[in-house]
Length: 304
Ligand SMILES: O=c1[nH]c(=O)c2[nH]c(=O)[nH]c2[nH]1
Image (cartoon, rainbow, N blue to C red; front, side, top):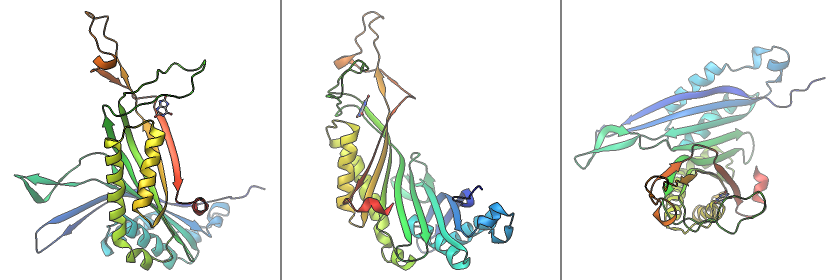
């Protein structure tokens, strides 16, 4: 007899834009995000017995995403996602967990003649600020993971990779000076919260953590003489754990985007390798993919 081992459903890719207008200053603030909200609970019969009486329609879930964005602040995204998730538990007794994932897209204020413009913005990169919030009943029921996704960085020196395994499968030469480029995907997991009020009380910490993590990543990327992606991301994780005490885990996933040297000596003896390298060939694939999860102490991985 088959068994429904797990089930969740909801609306994905809900696009929301909120404009907040400060009447006094005339300044507007824009937040654009893409939201996913999936519900879990006593919904088995909708799958196994065509019982739609337990189904909150995904269309209603979409409507709720918009209504909660109107009723509450959407910043920081950790708070909005917690409020939205809690709503489904408060409203529907048979729902046990709401999973709210969202990505905030960048709209950076334009400067015109050196002054911040009150209502015009531009997209300065594909980077997003993401949150994954799971709201369940009971103590520690609100689990929040915040992240930076798609922050593209490049350095033209200050990166090496040598001393790796050399055997009959190896062709890669050791290097003491290479290009390093990646799209940062970094997450930090907060110690669980008991209630939305507890999230609200710490509300200023979420933006600060995002700023700290982003600052650490960019600074270390630039200033460090990197011996490998692995070691650089571990150092970034250590510094983020140090800077944000309420976080008990940091995860990284970094593609190593390769830039190949190009031998042009066939054309008039042009020198374009080693210390003469100037023109490179960016590779769209394959890329390295280096991941790690760094916990504050050995017990915290159990939170997953
Ligand atoms: O920083 C790196 N880590 C690796 O594991 C690796 N493997 C590789 O081919 N190049 C690199 N670079």
